[in-house]
Length: 142
Image (cartoon, rainbow, N blue to C red; front, side):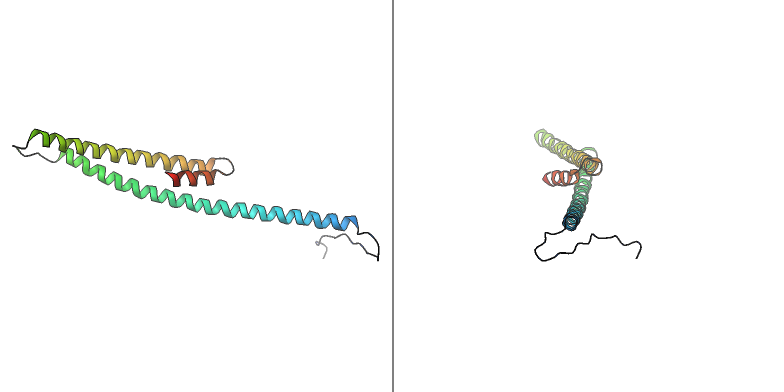
């Protein structure tokens, strides 16, 4: 049809050298096919790393939710629990010390997960080429 590209035509006679246009055209087509396949592989790899990034993000959210619940229990330990009279002061001090350590560790966990999720996702979405892989790998290391 009229929209079909014209291909170079060359008649090869016995003992003649091949037409340069024909070889140049085949070489250009091979280069274009190679470029298309390379970009397809990069796109598929980026898609796969994007899914890994989403998986890491959802795992971190689950950990943050659990840490937030445990931090709430720690607050209840500090505020709501009344230590009975007659308890040795050292035991009371240890109770409040470990309740406070519990609260601090859970709050540190929630804070760290929030930072990793925000910074990792931002890097993956807004960073330069290859940043999705870097963000997914970095989140996986955490």
